[in-house]
Length: 185
Image (tube, rainbow, N blue to C red; front, side, top):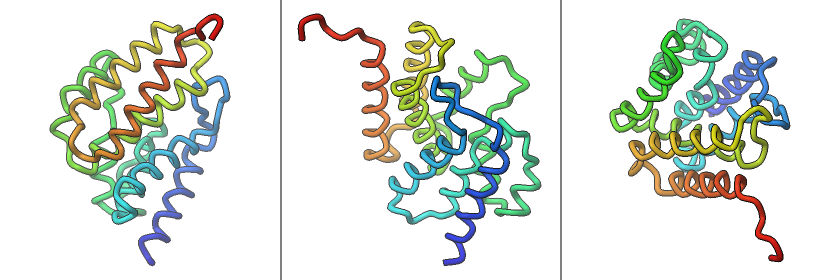
């Protein structure tokens, strides 16, 4: 029971830390929606058996996007959570192309926990591209993101058939969202 109280504390912390952040899509959803979706995917993929992983999923962008000090995560949620969060955090001092390349290279070497969060994160991002793409993202940029996400996920496969299926469905939906409807159909 105590660990699920910590999950709710993490959801509250994530909502507070990301309060002013919005998704890039035209719907401009509150960013917490993404964090909750990633955590829900991870919880479902593990049948709710790993509250520490769910907490890390809720906090997975805190260091990268909101510069939350790792020490704060350790103090509030423990070192195991902080270690997972750090494992999925990009080094924002590097150029974007280098960060993207490193995600592809590092994916197969990640821990089970980091792989699950990365897979859930990419699934959520592709669902957003399909449902509410960023207004300033061209078709080409969306295609590039879909292909890059597939390259990252290729190194994550074998960790959760159910979550991989969710990703594959999201990738297909994102690709379909770019195709004009057939005339007369």
